[in-house]
Length: 115
Image 1 (cartoon, rainbow, N blue to C red):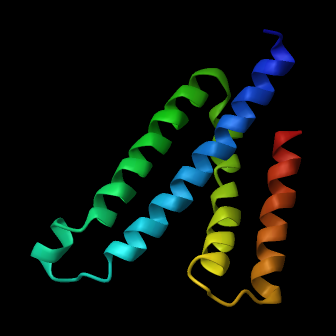
Image 2: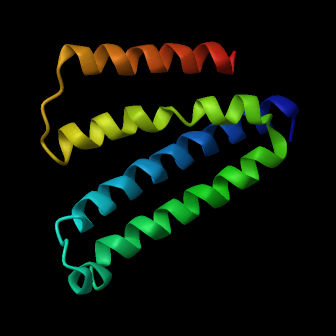
């Protein structure tokens, strides 16, 4: 596999990793509705969120083996884009212009770092 194909694969893994992290947060948000301790530890959403965070961490470790930390860590900000989409489409939160502008700035910064 050529170097360019490997880098594309690694960047796709970063996108996948950030999606895992965003969905992990969604499940933890759902678990937070049970503030009673015994209900919380029996809540499947808690374990799904934790498992997704663990999977994201393992992908992160793999990617860090091949890419510089100074590249990978800023690219994890892509999670904010996923989070806004999840908040809007799944949690039905309102997204205003300021949030869109903020995520646009994150995306622009991510593209600049990736180049």
